[in-house]
Length: 273
Image 1 (cartoon, rainbow, N blue to C red):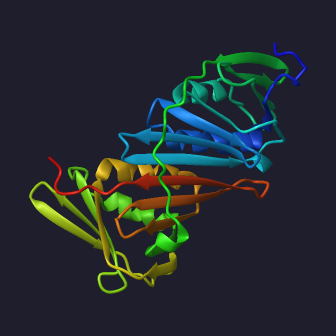
Image 2 (image 1 turned 180 degrees about the vertical axis):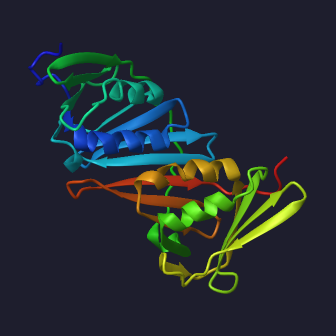
């Protein structure tokens, strides 16, 4: 069992069952690559995964989500996201009366991430190997570079996803200040499908488009970016002149805190080989 003396640790955090559920949902929504990079700052934790330098997903967990959050200095490390999720789900309550508390400890570079799980007096100590951090691409959209922005309720995206042809490999997403305004196009086996979304739909809260931008992206990346639909109520879709897409989800916790999920997807140039 971990020593009660926490002075040697750079990061010490504690979370109860209610917010632990949200954290696990966020981690599962980014869990499409084995290795994740974790950045700890006074604002909280940011967990990032990247696929082929074409897609990047980040979960932002603010410090206020934790019952306790102490950080002596900013930290960055990588670890197996699969193992982290499995560890946090190791003991899951079978009833509302069950109590689960998770404590996280990290000493610094070269040390493992230590996790203590306590469930109704039963304590489990996990040690997760940390890895050398590989450089991540700097995906971001500065406010002045955003040409199109749409904020919509997630139930609309769920309906659209149900209509997508699974035989398609590519998706074209068009945002424009003119007709068709908001169009999703797919080319399946022997057919082309266009899905036009009314820009004045009640489920669209904001539609701010200044330039016609068409982004061609892999359908598999769109599906990955939709993994956060189950735990979010709204999503913001933004793009720049180059067609870089950002899906940002807002997830509310039961005690009123807000977590975020961001997915950046680079557009393809030319046709898929």
